[in-house]
Image (cartoon, rainbow, N blue to C red; front, top):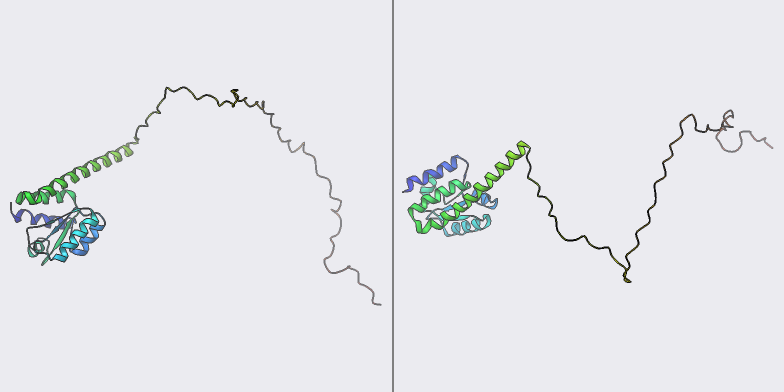
Length: 214
């Protein structure tokens, strides 16, 4: 297996929107924990290598150095040169690493095994989510577990220090029936207002009669 079966797969990832190219896009997807594997060119600078390691630690993902130069990697992704790329799909990442394992099993074998484990877990989570969504559409819910019945005897009533049990509270007896409100006809009529025909008092200072001038 040679580069003709690996580099075109990176172009397929780019067309499908599953590849980030360049340091800034790779850093963004790594910090968002969307990157599955970081791939570094064989002739990348030491600073780029250190940044790739830092991005992998921040995104909790793998990083591998490819047996291809920056020019070869850039040509595969439509650039003049590319030093670092990130694959964001777990299935495509596992496929690429398996093809690298065919080139050098000692160098890429462990990474291929780790990606296989991650791909298996991702498939299980996806299957559980799909099953849960189907159950929600059908109106099914998870079965409730019945309460555990214990064979222990019921707790005894608390006793006084002298050994006698506490007396039970006396019952209050039956409640008295609530009296109904009298109807409108049986209600007492209000008394007549004695001031109904009186004239209102004028507002102002003092009496309404003018004082005679002395």
